[in-house]
Image (tube, rainbow, N blue to C red; front, side, top):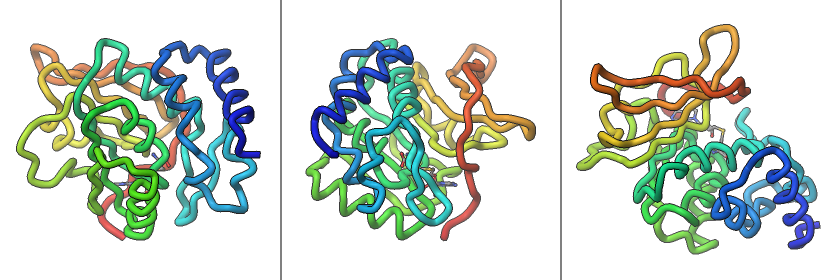
Length: 211
Ligand code: SAH
């Protein structure tokens, strides 16, 4: 059930849905998604669907993970990425297999601890995790990130994230306008941030504060 063949089937499905980046397909073919979900759900880990991870949160659908990752690297090979919403750590592991430096923050302490343990056991040593509110970005940052990815939907793009995004950086996030959610790409323009609508999506909401 967790065999390479099951994983290969998922890759074929991702290709059919328009994921074409070789690196993304190769990485998603080898990151063990079943390790990031509860044992009772492991047999469903290679279905292209979101699954519950406890605390009212979900592991994102593989297509969404692949699509967002593809959008981050489509214009070259960035060095650093900040993820808001570590959750179970699966997207973090995919990013860590591609980016030299990965930073990820999570507001729920238990999820942060669990992701830390899993990512350590799987030997992703280029990942730094923090238990903090992602609306503030990475605490006491000394440089800016090449990419930022948010895995929960916000109703306002946090100012701290715009400030922590490098001048040529790309930020991908789900934006909730009160009616529905749209995946957007944010970059720096001559007159401030440029926000480009991509497609309709469904994410858990970005929540304030720590738990
Ligand atoms: N990337 C994750 C997605 C998890 S769902 C995965 O593939 O498993 C989104 C996550 O964002 C949840 O774990 C939730 O607790 C977290 N989150 C929500 N609001 C947050 C905030 N303000 N700061 C940091 N994390 C937040």
